[in-house]
Image (cartoon, rainbow, N blue to C red; front, side, top):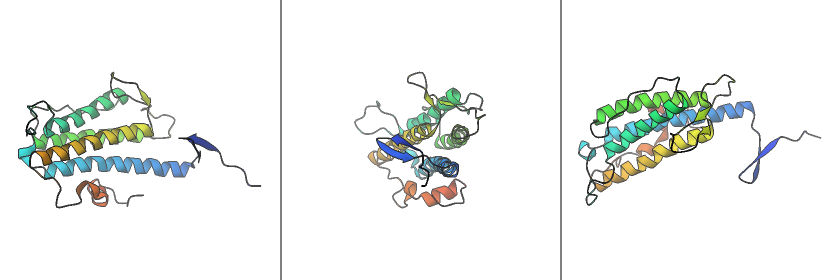
Length: 200
Protein backbone atom coordinates (compact mmCIF):
# COMPACT_ATOMS: atom_id res chain seq x y z
CA UNK A 1 0.00 0.00 0.00
CA UNK A 2 1.37 3.41 -0.99
CA UNK A 3 2.12 5.74 1.93
CA UNK A 4 -0.40 8.51 2.48
CA UNK A 5 0.83 11.99 1.65
CA UNK A 6 0.72 14.59 4.37
CA UNK A 7 -1.80 17.38 3.98
CA UNK A 8 -2.95 20.58 5.66
CA UNK A 9 -6.30 22.34 5.61
CA UNK A 10 -6.58 25.70 3.84
CA UNK A 11 -9.95 27.41 3.61
CA UNK A 12 -11.74 24.20 4.49
CA UNK A 13 -9.98 22.14 1.81
CA UNK A 14 -7.32 19.51 2.36
CA UNK A 15 -4.17 20.48 0.46
CA UNK A 16 -1.17 18.14 0.05
CA UNK A 17 2.09 19.55 1.36
CA UNK A 18 4.29 20.48 -1.58
CA UNK A 19 7.77 19.18 -2.25
CA UNK A 20 10.77 21.42 -1.72
CA UNK A 21 11.20 21.78 -5.51
CA UNK A 22 7.57 22.82 -5.99
CA UNK A 23 7.75 25.37 -3.17
CA UNK A 24 10.98 26.74 -4.62
CA UNK A 25 9.28 27.23 -7.99
CA UNK A 26 6.35 29.02 -6.36
CA UNK A 27 8.78 31.29 -4.51
CA UNK A 28 10.61 32.13 -7.73
CA UNK A 29 7.32 32.85 -9.49
CA UNK A 30 6.28 35.25 -6.73
CA UNK A 31 9.60 37.08 -6.94
CA UNK A 32 9.35 37.31 -10.73
CA UNK A 33 5.81 38.67 -10.40
CA UNK A 34 6.97 41.32 -7.96
CA UNK A 35 9.73 42.28 -10.40
CA UNK A 36 7.00 42.89 -12.99
CA UNK A 37 5.17 45.07 -10.48
CA UNK A 38 7.50 48.03 -10.87
CA UNK A 39 7.68 47.48 -14.63
CA UNK A 40 3.95 48.27 -14.61
CA UNK A 41 4.55 51.48 -12.66
CA UNK A 42 7.36 52.51 -14.99
CA UNK A 43 5.15 51.85 -18.03
CA UNK A 44 2.42 54.10 -16.63
CA UNK A 45 4.92 56.85 -15.86
CA UNK A 46 6.41 56.66 -19.36
CA UNK A 47 2.96 56.95 -21.00
CA UNK A 48 1.47 59.52 -18.64
CA UNK A 49 0.75 62.99 -20.01
CA UNK A 50 2.65 65.49 -17.84
CA UNK A 51 -0.51 67.64 -17.65
CA UNK A 52 -2.17 64.89 -15.60
CA UNK A 53 0.65 64.68 -13.04
CA UNK A 54 -0.82 67.22 -10.61
CA UNK A 55 -4.23 67.73 -12.18
CA UNK A 56 -7.22 67.80 -9.84
CA UNK A 57 -10.41 65.96 -10.72
CA UNK A 58 -13.12 68.50 -11.59
CA UNK A 59 -15.34 69.16 -8.57
CA UNK A 60 -12.89 67.56 -6.11
CA UNK A 61 -11.89 70.91 -4.58
CA UNK A 62 -8.35 69.73 -3.89
CA UNK A 63 -9.32 67.11 -1.31
CA UNK A 64 -8.14 64.00 -3.16
CA UNK A 65 -4.68 62.74 -4.02
CA UNK A 66 -3.20 63.70 -7.37
CA UNK A 67 -1.41 61.11 -9.50
CA UNK A 68 1.86 62.61 -8.28
CA UNK A 69 0.78 62.13 -4.67
CA UNK A 70 -0.22 58.51 -5.32
CA UNK A 71 3.14 57.64 -6.86
CA UNK A 72 4.86 59.31 -3.91
CA UNK A 73 2.66 57.34 -1.51
CA UNK A 74 3.58 54.06 -3.21
CA UNK A 75 7.31 54.77 -2.93
CA UNK A 76 7.12 56.07 0.64
CA UNK A 77 5.02 53.08 1.73
CA UNK A 78 7.76 50.79 0.47
CA UNK A 79 10.20 52.68 2.68
CA UNK A 80 8.01 52.03 5.74
CA UNK A 81 8.00 48.31 4.93
CA UNK A 82 11.77 48.29 4.46
CA UNK A 83 12.56 50.25 7.62
CA UNK A 84 10.29 48.12 9.81
CA UNK A 85 10.80 44.70 8.22
CA UNK A 86 14.41 44.85 7.00
CA UNK A 87 16.23 47.52 9.04
CA UNK A 88 19.58 46.01 8.03
CA UNK A 89 18.99 47.01 4.40
CA UNK A 90 19.78 50.39 2.89
CA UNK A 91 16.61 52.44 2.54
CA UNK A 92 16.25 54.91 -0.35
CA UNK A 93 15.27 58.52 0.31
CA UNK A 94 11.58 59.46 0.44
CA UNK A 95 9.97 61.69 -2.16
CA UNK A 96 7.91 64.82 -1.52
CA UNK A 97 4.40 64.37 -2.95
CA UNK A 98 4.10 68.12 -3.50
CA UNK A 99 7.42 68.64 -5.28
CA UNK A 100 8.60 65.47 -7.01
CA UNK A 101 8.70 65.35 -10.80
CA UNK A 102 7.72 62.37 -12.94
CA UNK A 103 11.39 61.69 -13.64
CA UNK A 104 12.25 61.77 -9.93
CA UNK A 105 9.32 59.48 -9.12
CA UNK A 106 10.39 56.95 -11.76
CA UNK A 107 13.96 56.88 -10.42
CA UNK A 108 12.76 56.59 -6.81
CA UNK A 109 10.44 53.72 -7.71
CA UNK A 110 13.26 51.82 -9.37
CA UNK A 111 15.40 52.12 -6.23
CA UNK A 112 12.70 51.16 -3.74
CA UNK A 113 11.44 48.32 -5.95
CA UNK A 114 14.93 46.81 -6.12
CA UNK A 115 15.26 46.90 -2.33
CA UNK A 116 11.78 45.48 -1.78
CA UNK A 117 12.60 42.64 -4.16
CA UNK A 118 15.73 41.88 -2.12
CA UNK A 119 13.66 41.99 1.06
CA UNK A 120 11.07 39.61 -0.38
CA UNK A 121 13.77 37.28 -1.66
CA UNK A 122 15.05 36.87 1.88
CA UNK A 123 11.58 36.75 3.43
CA UNK A 124 10.49 33.90 1.15
CA UNK A 125 13.74 31.99 1.59
CA UNK A 126 13.84 28.65 3.36
CA UNK A 127 17.32 29.43 4.69
CA UNK A 128 17.54 29.06 8.47
CA UNK A 129 19.63 32.24 8.71
CA UNK A 130 17.25 34.52 6.79
CA UNK A 131 17.09 37.99 8.30
CA UNK A 132 13.62 39.12 7.19
CA UNK A 133 11.29 37.19 9.50
CA UNK A 134 8.46 39.69 10.01
CA UNK A 135 6.41 42.11 7.93
CA UNK A 136 5.49 45.39 9.55
CA UNK A 137 3.34 47.95 7.71
CA UNK A 138 3.80 50.53 10.44
CA UNK A 139 2.57 51.11 13.98
CA UNK A 140 -1.06 51.49 12.84
CA UNK A 141 -1.60 47.74 12.52
CA UNK A 142 -0.36 44.28 13.49
CA UNK A 143 2.95 42.74 12.48
CA UNK A 144 2.81 39.54 10.41
CA UNK A 145 5.31 36.72 9.90
CA UNK A 146 7.25 37.29 6.66
CA UNK A 147 6.02 35.05 3.87
CA UNK A 148 3.48 34.68 1.10
CA UNK A 149 0.92 37.00 2.72
CA UNK A 150 3.59 39.70 2.81
CA UNK A 151 4.00 39.39 -0.96
CA UNK A 152 0.24 39.42 -1.50
CA UNK A 153 -0.21 42.61 0.54
CA UNK A 154 2.65 44.43 -1.18
CA UNK A 155 1.40 43.53 -4.66
CA UNK A 156 -2.28 44.21 -3.89
CA UNK A 157 -1.47 47.62 -2.38
CA UNK A 158 0.19 48.78 -5.58
CA UNK A 159 -2.42 47.19 -7.86
CA UNK A 160 -5.13 49.09 -5.96
CA UNK A 161 -3.38 52.42 -6.44
CA UNK A 162 -2.55 51.68 -10.10
CA UNK A 163 -6.28 51.38 -10.65
CA UNK A 164 -6.76 54.78 -9.02
CA UNK A 165 -4.08 56.30 -11.25
CA UNK A 166 -5.65 54.94 -14.44
CA UNK A 167 -9.07 56.22 -13.33
CA UNK A 168 -7.73 59.67 -12.38
CA UNK A 169 -5.92 60.05 -15.69
CA UNK A 170 -9.16 59.27 -17.51
CA UNK A 171 -11.14 61.71 -15.33
CA UNK A 172 -8.78 64.61 -16.10
CA UNK A 173 -8.94 63.86 -19.82
CA UNK A 174 -5.65 62.03 -20.37
CA UNK A 175 -6.09 58.47 -21.59
CA UNK A 176 -3.41 56.03 -20.49
CA UNK A 177 -2.15 52.94 -22.31
CA UNK A 178 -5.05 53.00 -24.80
CA UNK A 179 -2.88 51.90 -27.74
CA UNK A 180 -1.15 48.95 -26.04
CA UNK A 181 -2.10 46.02 -23.77
CA UNK A 182 0.12 47.81 -21.28
CA UNK A 183 -0.02 46.44 -17.77
CA UNK A 184 -1.77 43.28 -19.01
CA UNK A 185 1.02 42.36 -21.43
CA UNK A 186 3.01 40.39 -18.87
CA UNK A 187 5.34 38.75 -21.38
CA UNK A 188 6.61 42.21 -22.35
CA UNK A 189 6.72 43.36 -18.73
CA UNK A 190 8.87 40.35 -17.82
CA UNK A 191 11.39 41.32 -20.51
CA UNK A 192 11.43 44.90 -19.23
CA UNK A 193 12.12 43.53 -15.75
CA UNK A 194 15.11 41.59 -17.12
CA UNK A 195 13.48 38.15 -16.92
CA UNK A 196 14.22 35.64 -19.66
CA UNK A 197 11.67 32.94 -18.85
CA UNK A 198 7.94 32.81 -19.64
CA UNK A 199 5.27 33.06 -16.92
CA UNK A 200 4.85 29.77 -15.06
